[in-house]
Length: 103
Image 1: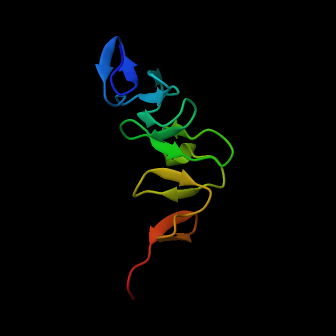
Image 2: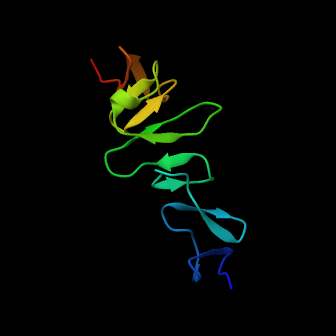
């Protein structure tokens, strides 16, 4: 029996718990190392102090620290992300994504 289309470990739930994602009527496990995910291959967030290394055309994975980011990625220390390009609210400065400050 499922409630709202999701179930995990034989219990009925309205949303899948961290570490799982809603796949049809089941809660399937996220890829190894993900704290949360929205599919079986890409991490949305990482546990503890780990960093999210976002890949275009590949799986988003968790890495130990900014030194473990894929070469050439921009470092966003605020969100612990390794990015191909900085988000629209930040600028790149020597490989880091930083917020603009008023002069």
